[in-house]
Image (cartoon, rainbow, N blue to C red; front, side):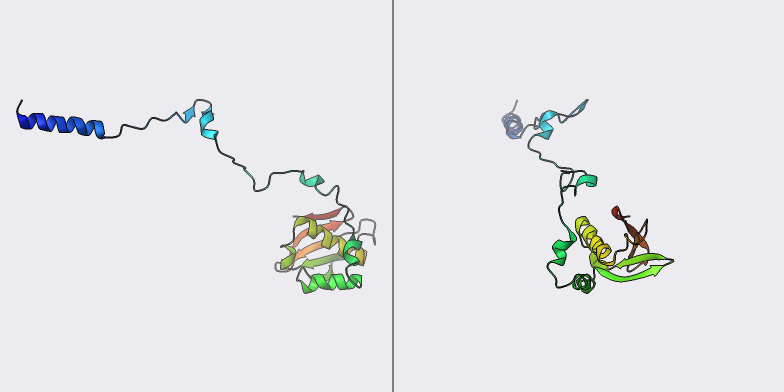
Length: 159
């Protein structure tokens, strides 16, 4: 072998030793799914807020009463007018013998509990559900003029 051939062979051999070898990693997948190592240091939560109470019982221990809001105003109508001024409520009327409460855009910005409270206050001030055996009123959207729910003696039901 000539000097040049020996020199080139040694450079190739040294280069091969200097190159990194392929990375060796634990297998990520096994027959039953991902391996245990895959789930380490992961704190994945599938929901923004984990459910603590089922929806149908989340207000069981709520001791809020309409008087809590009435006491903060001079009169009940001042509270109702505040809902109108805040664009939570838009209008009230009767459609085919059914009372209708038309809600504004800020009604949709309220949480479920406050939507229930606003409609409960409206019912208490105007006495709609107590006026008939099956008293109720419809909740209409201000924009589409379509029904989005109903308030009965059992409370608020939104679609």
